[in-house]
Amino acid sequence: MARIGIIGSGVVARTLGSGFLEHGHEVTLGTRDVAQLEQWRQETGGRGQVGSFADAAAFGEIVVLATKGAATKAAMGLAGIANLTGKTVIDTTNPIDDTQSPRDGVLSFYTEAGDSQLERLQALAPAARMVKAFSCVGAPFMVNPPFSEKPTMFICGNDEAARRQVAGIVAQFGWEVEDAGSAAAAGAIEALCILWCIPGFRENRWTHAFRMVKL
Ligand SMILES: NC(=O)c1ccc[n+]([C@@H]2O[C@H](COP(=O)([O-])OP(=O)(O)OC[C@H]3O[C@@H](n4cnc5c(N)ncnc54)[C@H](OP(=O)(O)O)[C@@H]3O)[C@@H](O)[C@H]2O)c1
Image (cartoon, rainbow, N blue to C red; front, side, top):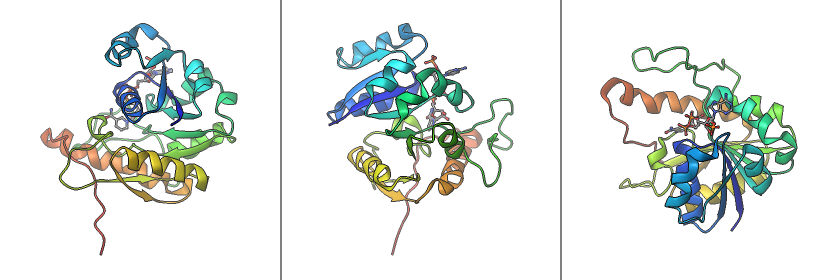
């Protein structure tokens, strides 16, 4: 049981927020405009709380970043970098370049080879224990994925204890966890977002998840 602060009001924030509540945690969602979360708050029977980005970050023992990729640095600034100090911070964001349309279904990222969103955010908040997770699947499947076999969630981050903590949450949400090690793996995990979206943009198929099969 933990207090979870989620920076964001979009489908990822609301889905994970409801998931954390369902699994027994306390949740505050943060936004620049609380009115847009009133429906979500009511859907949770008032158990889900809403506030500013800073309210959510201060509330959370664990903080989740669920903002538009390119806006995440700004959102972290509003949340207060000091509010992330020493905390496990789950980064769900993908560095999608919204100025470009997908080419043959392939999204463009604003990051480059050898670089990643997670590493950029970690550099902005060096005292946060950042872990990439939930970035490689569509929001409807993040909590209790309804597939016939357990899909695999890839996570990474520099702090081993934080990765273990996030692995526990991801497993609680119904996933097999593949711990890919340090933040150096983030670019590879983030690229799975591009792969996941290709069937969607090409053939309007959005109902899948990755599974690592093993001998
Ligand atoms: N959608 C999915 O299925 C999915 C799956 C995996 C990963 N992701 C990643 O998860 C993240 C969230 O995705 P989403 O679809 O839920 O929402 P989104 O539409 O990508 O982002 C919405 C959030 O971004 C914030 N935001 C937008 N512009 C901002 C700015 N200039 N300054 C500060 N904050 C700003 C909004 O703040 P306000 O609350 O103030 O409006 C809102 O909380 C993204 O990085 C996305 O790539 C999405």
